[in-house]
Image (spheres, rainbow, N blue to C red):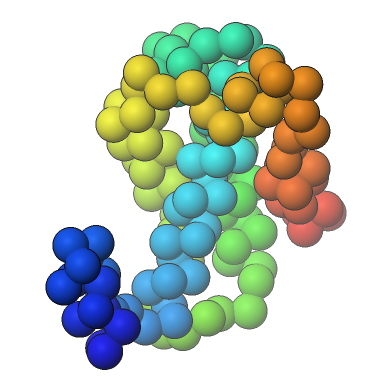
Length: 130
């Protein structure tokens, strides 16, 4: 709580939460990154365009379903329930909407000839899903 108070005093804000809440946030973030980053890079579009396309919505649903399965099979971080596929999709939708005009980091990496994190995101999920 001391760290949270220091962050707040610096105007950065912070929330003290348990491990289960943090774990849940990480699964949500993984879903957003695993859906939006690769598709923005492949399609050369901003975040907001991905879910405007029917194909983007279908892929998002599939990726979120797979992540939900991996999450459900993972050892629980705490008493916090794993996010469902629908909860993951809703978070992806929120991220796409809130950051609609942004270029994803993976798009930027590809655009500038840098290696992307696709293997660390989607590859990790695919390996765990087997």
